[in-house]
Length: 160
Image (cartoon, rainbow, N blue to C red; front, top):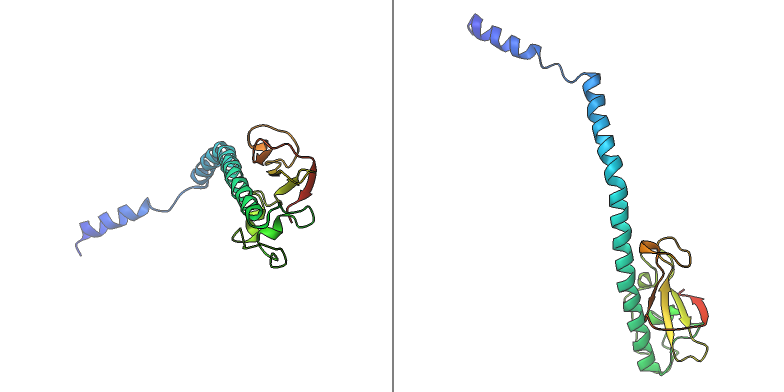
């Protein structure tokens, strides 16, 4: 190899020693600032998605309760709860379920049991969730959700 070519190779290797600590800290700081701005927005987006999924899930469970009633002539009792939609219906006259694929459907997107409420006269029901905050009331993602939406009920029991 000629002397001039060797010199060019050596010169190009002198500047490639890597990044300095200062450069690395600047890059890490920029990434941290971007993450600080994006994290709350992503979290809110996730919570909104869960709230929408909860409403769809409540509608699905309410439909399953109506199918149970169509087959058996009654709504599930407070003692039976919503688990009767998934299993152990062989002892119930007219039961042709399961009405839901599995018991996971009986939990809201936040991992809590869907609440089942049967009116004291046994003629209407509601399934509900307390929203992201798991407290009564609220707005936005903390809004309590219920299906069917126009039902007034008085007796409450958990879904499982």
